[in-house]
Length: 136
Figure 1 (cartoon, one colour):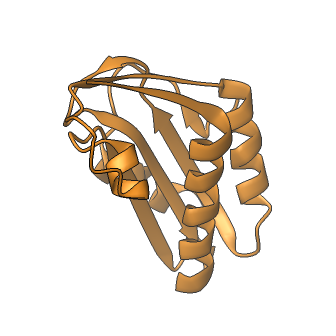
Figure 2: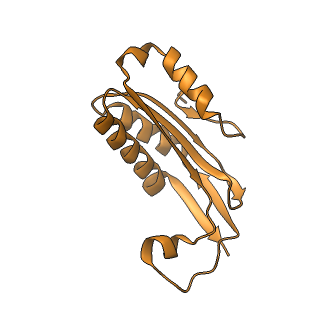
């Protein structure tokens, strides 16, 4: 297990993560940090992504993740050009609208690489490493 995937019951502070990142030996190579905080929304995924108008409001979500898969996604992200710092926290269990699902921090040298790195990592986690079951 690496220090990149944070395993705790509560979502870490993004401010604390940035302070940690700025104290990291990689900080001198980093020109930008981006964070992503995903939350449970009331609008069903089918409505938002596919326009399915016959959906009901989401009342909760069952969420879990594959830790080894997330670790592999993080390792892949750290191999991308210009990416020097990554932290990921994922929730699990029964969640309600407004609850944080995940938090990601990524640091790199220039804006396009950091944006691409964040999109790569969050996409990889969401598409390959998590299970989300919306409740209505």
